[in-house]
Length: 588
Picture (spheres, rainbow, N blue to C red):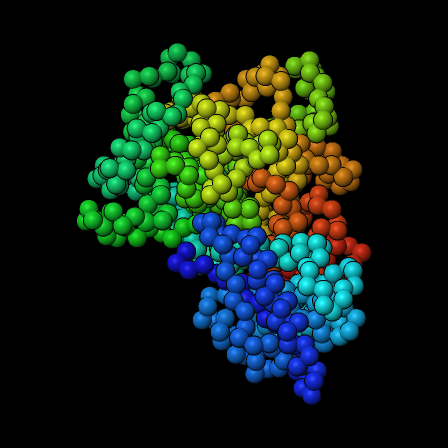
């Protein structure tokens, strides 16, 4: 993205003079300044730069100042706004009127000139005018001179900003479809009517033959290719070939590495562009497609005759490459499952961490594990687990070998150390891909994700007549004893990356049991993000007007626009559907 979207902060004040407004100027502007400091200290863009905030030039007490603020924000690329106030103000006269910009209002919980009164009036105005806003109000009364931001308010402010920044950072970007529909997978049918109205993104398309052309005509940085190939050969450990002897082709391994290295470079250039191509006379190709996310069809038209895209997808999704730690090139979805790609994009933008792409492959009950391996599940896995593994590719960071305070984590790229990179590479083996699935050859990535990491799995599904819906499952990765893990892996494909996931159960509905989670999952793929981010996903979905049909997030953590309560408070899930339908896609 050429310029980072900023957070606009609007200090709202009582417009009455003769001592009223004058007495509130310092307190009101002080709230705005403290909020800006919170955001710049705590939040980062996906490239690691601290978030930037813009504060209105003056406090806003009426229409003229609201208009002046909006004009300033329009020139500063403001992507989301927060209004702050400690007092009563003129409701609709001071509103943020940009219908496509997520907006929140923080009303100070004090008794002198209570901000809650303005908060309620302004939120009513937002609902009536048709562009709902989030309301933030602390549970405890504060003194007028208290300059602290209470923990509950701080949490809401940060959750709103993370979700709003995700909205702003995807707006105007592209999803690049590299190929078309893989093996009839519905999510591979890239829908403009989803990406445009709901995400504000464009769709770009290329045929996979473009890879073949660029390989043959050397439309890539040849010096960078030599570095990439050397790094792969030195750092990617070749694992066992599990193919029958008749389907083993060691004489082709060198060609596979060379082709895969070129595909990594070409995939990067297709998504982001590369000025080096213009120096070689390929000016049009140098521009790229402006893609923050992409998908590679692979099967079957490419993989039946060429090395698969697993190495490309793995490296582009990872926090490092031959040049060391660097921002992931973007989100790249296996089998061009654009809906899982969009789900990965949500997690990536909320956390600044790489996402795990997985098949939601098997429910393992405690009884089945006991029967097959003799092992009795315990801990987070005591009620069973889901076997999440992709057919050969996922981010190397998904091995969970980076650590923080002695615990496995997936980090933002700017925190990744050389030790983290080494640990991920040492935990990963690259196996000749299964010939039955990939007759063109190539490599499959294998590791076992470290256990006890908090993770969140999500998935967007499209429903005829309804539109997009989002499902969310928070839980933990788990470890299994090596002999148990090996037995289970051998039943599927031991050459594929393995993540075992135990969702947090609630005893009700889709989370009554692990089986119910599996049985209610809407598609064959899921996007897995480090951390319990279900509440932030719900906040993001409400901004985009995507209802959530399944989640296990505690009710107190859910944060949606205040207008959602006007669609019912007894049936919160139904109210979410009704509100999203009523207000429509953000970019309608």
